[in-house]
Image (tube, rainbow, N blue to C red; front, top):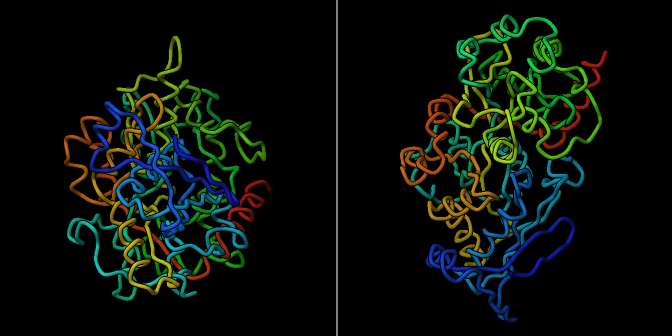
Length: 408
């Protein structure tokens, strides 16, 4: 079923035609195609932190290579993605799938080049996705949106009215029972640093203010204190630990009702739903899942997140190699590809990757399969994103320093 190519953390696979995707999956299965010496190589470095990422990118490569049989797609998944020395910032690829918090760094280092137009038109973009425009130039094709949300049971009506951090504190109380606590990952330095950037924007709203506090030497004390206020709400055994919990640990605890609420991204639903489907006896009911903004300050609610987007390397100069890169980026943003990848997970559980285009949230062929998209839509409409020079160097170290401060 295709061949697995490895260099570093490279995962790539072999293809099926997007034009025949439905027929192939329904009647013929996967079709293995021969690779010839005439193939052109397209190296792409993709965002590795997706649910069931190996299957996701296998399906992506299968579909693309059959539609473009002259292209040998080589996908690199770098698990050190956010590291300043061996992460995506140090890679040499033809196409980069960027967390746009690094977009300014890639532009300033001349690693990527401007693009001509948005796949589905700028007027169709969610406001947050406009971060792909820098200095009035388009530098990336937005792929999907990630950010933190508050998940809870809709039967817990008290949490429906949470708007600010102090509301959360009043509803949870001080040191709640472990099964009534808040589930949030404060062990991973990258997640802590992303939480810090989100909290900065929650507190100050304006990105030009937030930028002043995005260095290890000048962290914002108010924002760190806001994160510290979460500690009494959490089961201590799950806080500030260096233990490598199993994939989806917090999501599974939420499904088992070992926490009152869970803070995580939309794609966390993949693990939550799979765990619900696998659990016998009493557990969280899928129809009971509610989702709301996550605001880690007492300021006016201001949702923030990141845009994952595809950028073209500045090293591409020739007409054909630029065409191949454009074909890949446009292919990834087609609604047919989105639907295929949304439905390709284990147990037919949808991957709730949040698309950057408004029309996807009104498409019944998407929302009928994954109804929670309707709940996310009013939330993502309010989100903004952040990028700044130096984040590639600072992000991981910010998280490490905050972890140390929280432990004091």
